Image (tube, rainbow, N blue to C red; front, side, top):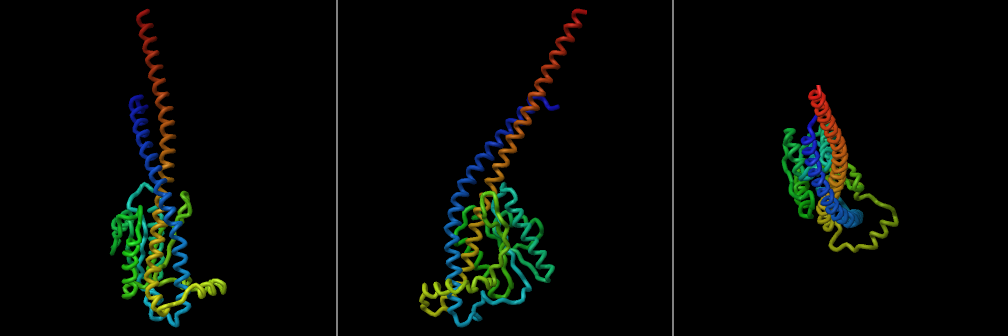
Length: 295
């Protein structure tokens, strides 16, 4: 059995660790509130962007001249998992990478070659450790992504797709549901999904026709809107991922603090038993010494 001093040192170490996890939980909670406010403000803008693009597409006479809309047989696909730059966030990074590898296996089973880009240091280090060839890594902004970060990813993906280097671009990220729930999403962003251009009912279509007068021609407007749509979708995914990361970290640190408290209680009980055993041993030694003297 460990000595009382050893147990005391371990209790002191666990208490110091609990102080750190509690501080990290509070920091993550503060960051989560800001990230949640950003994504809640972003969602209506992204939805309106989709509506505007759909209305402009319906007003266009032809969509064949837009490279980002052209669907072709998929021979090569680019997979971009959105991970964090730091750990200590539970399964946040692991579940994104697990889904990315599952997507890769499904594509390879269909005879599709895969390429990897990645956002976040954790994803980049994992892919390189597994000997994957990472052609582009974007790091340093997972806590607070800005629009220009999404632009960098979108421009690279759009360039590869327009040049025919890849036939599909997919992003894998955590969609923020709540501080306790993050849902992994595998979304194809290129070619631009047909559902983004689908009709949404006569009432909505009439509203869109009444809201906009197209000047210049719808085709010219759509040529500008399509890259912005891709940037917006990636930016929304980055914000969803940032909020999910803080929620996962807050939950992980709360669980760590709870586990530390339970461990302290267990160690305290062990320490009391060890102290009691030492006291009992000392009493037995004193009694044995007294019996020896009296004899």
